[in-house]
Figure 1 (cartoon, rainbow, N blue to C red):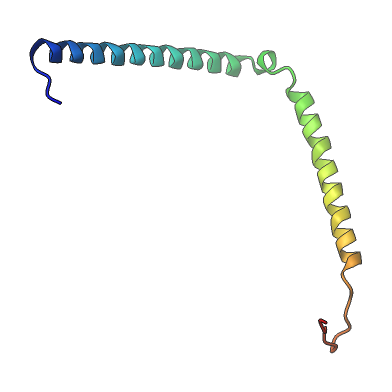
Figure 2: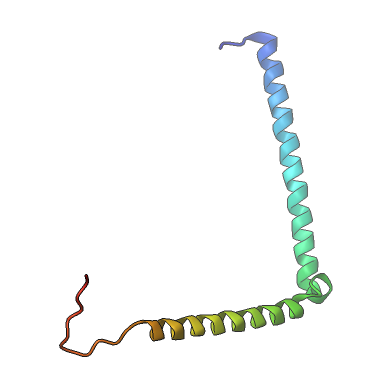
Length: 92
């Protein structure tokens, strides 16, 4: 589609304004994120009061997972028959 004259100029101006508005919004978001990251780095305990609780919770969950894994491996070893060496396993 070919657009000429004033329509083309106005369309270019509209697109330029939209792009500039989006750019300004992205710069504002970036500045806000950089500010919040800087504040978090300066005083992490005030922004993340539950970090120690989360670490403790994770350690407890990890211990449960390890225990469940070990139990599953033990059950697997019990359920697999041991075949003496030299014998063949025959499937029906």
